[in-house]
Image 1 (cartoon, rainbow, N blue to C red):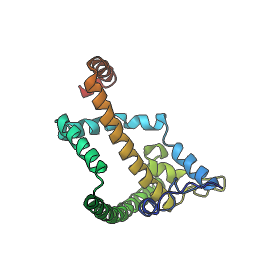
Image 2 (cartoon, helix red, strand yellow):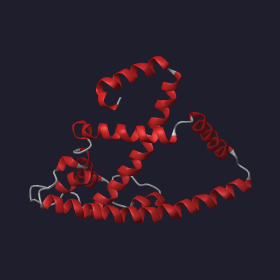
Image 3 (spheres, helix red, strand yellow):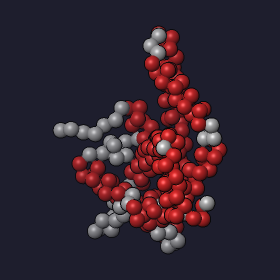
Image 4 (cartoon, helix red, strand yellow):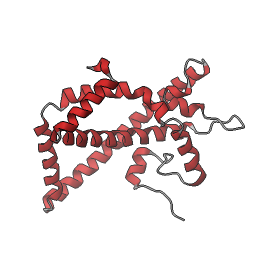
Length: 203
């Protein structure tokens, strides 16, 4: 039987009850719960906030596009070297990175536990609704026996997964999108006009 398993280092950081580690009915149960929130009608309420955060980030960190390109070339050059000293240094850096990743994972897990408890209280007090955010949505999922569909551990581990997946995909998307728009002025103007019509208050 085929099973979806990641390297032990990834499992140590994201833990063992995230979607990439689950299979069979467990995978379906958690996936269905996550997808009930990650839909266009739920996510569209965040478009304005995401737009605002991307704008702030670009203004603060992306003024010099040559700097971004130069950094990309440095990374490619580093990856292409194969001398023994570089391999040793890279290995040391990888071990160091794994250590700090594990420390960061524990810290984030502790913070998320607090968030989950806060959301539980708000649900009990009827001051929060399922579409409000992903944690509240997952906490609200119950089966026919009125039992929680997703456990606290699964919520924590899958929020971690969503955070990591969202960070990598979003940053890569923004990078390539800006690169392509800078090379196609006509497309840039069309996108700009379309954005102005959708979010006039932002301009």
